[in-house]
Image 1 (cartoon, rainbow, N blue to C red):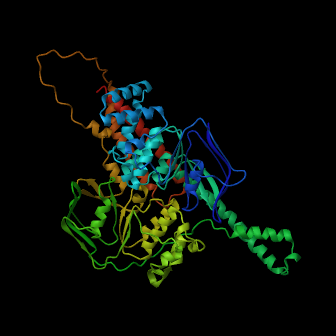
Image 2 (image 1 turned 30 degrees about the vertical axis):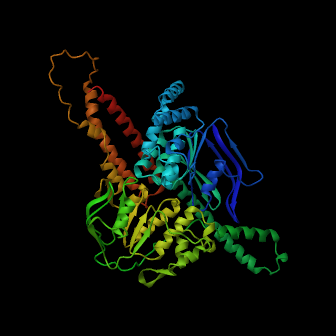
Image 3 (image 1 turned 180 degrees about the vertical axis):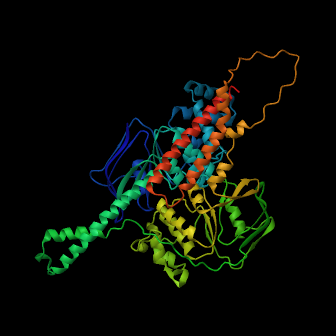
Length: 625
């Protein structure tokens, strides 16, 4: 069943063509992710699909199935500023949602007659499913103050509220622009499972590669204005894209050889174009354009020579800090060593940004002390970012910081070269900041920090709004970076790839110092697993009573083989979880060939399915133990 069809859609931004003659069909059950560089028109395409923006081209058509409902999550959602969280979440044309909205507002008013009428309407419409979904979704997205006015919410809270609103409506087709931005890891994992389990169509933009791997079944890529569709999840996309580039490479070798041959011929001819074979000249122009095409950035290691870092770097001695009743950190001590890259993780609102400001001495401790080495030069990329001057060009913004950064062996990297490495070609370096997309601005802000050549990086949510290609370049940069780094991120893939040491902020001031990746931490801290349930002590016997026991239905006893199956499942699940963890760690290796990626992806799917089946079976058997 087709939900949406695009035909011959074009879109340009000034002189830049974002995409041309785009054709796309989205059907029931398709979960498509859009992957492209920042500035390639990802958000624009989502707006066109959501009918928020018109396409270009006389032949352009957008056909939407009128029998389906559509939910659109923009990057920057807007609400009526006078509404409360509850009113905004339940602002819908659905009769069931309207009934629950009236009921919830009646409860707040404590008007018993109104409550009774609204309750009757909820019963007539059988809308209690909406009520339970409302509590689950708002709870999972940490939106508990239902009477709070929308105007007082932060940008991140508004994004979560907009997400809650469209999930509550249960549309047939979801259009999502960076749905994981402003979500903590627990929220992302919940949303991941929710979307993967729902029978709906999805078209989304996200930089979260684990999310891509586990939710999507197709990847649409825009590359230099051309559109490529790949069947399968993120790992399948990587495999098929590598094969496409390999084919392109062999084709380019032939084009280059033909170009050289034609170039020799064209130079032998008289200068007057009219004396040449016009068809051959036209063919040469086409071959020349093909031969000079770039298939993508060719990356080589950046051997940075950061400013010298002494033996004393950053020391925290029994640090404690609270804001009123909220304790951020309590009696925490740590001494940083050269080259350490530490991830800072925790739920939203636990105080990660405040903890970072304690380390940089922007905020004073309540007790304890922070000792900073004399040679430490911080490079701090924060969530709000710095303000960019709109009337400056890209290259001017970077040159305001420095003309070059020093490399090892006395070499230098110019501002222009660093910009090229992070996907700002020379032509775009002359573009004004006012013309950049949101993702391009974030990339430029990040480069301002790197251009200062710090020896201690603090990156607070650096992955938000960056495309997957830029993330790969940033990861390579950080892996080679010889200084220290603290990274605050909800991007699990990014964290797993860069850090193997974590500070986990668990609440009430407790900061857990954990040696390992985020995935290994998550696996070790899983609660309510079958293994733990099986190990739980038996319930205590009820005290003796003179009253005869009430009659209870006779419970079916397990057979010998069922008892054995029940006892074996926890160990089997534990073995599968270990294999799953090992596979996820293998995905982080840059040396995997396409066949291995395909095999591992298939095996991971089998493991996830088997774990679900075994856990379900264990619960069934536990009812008869």
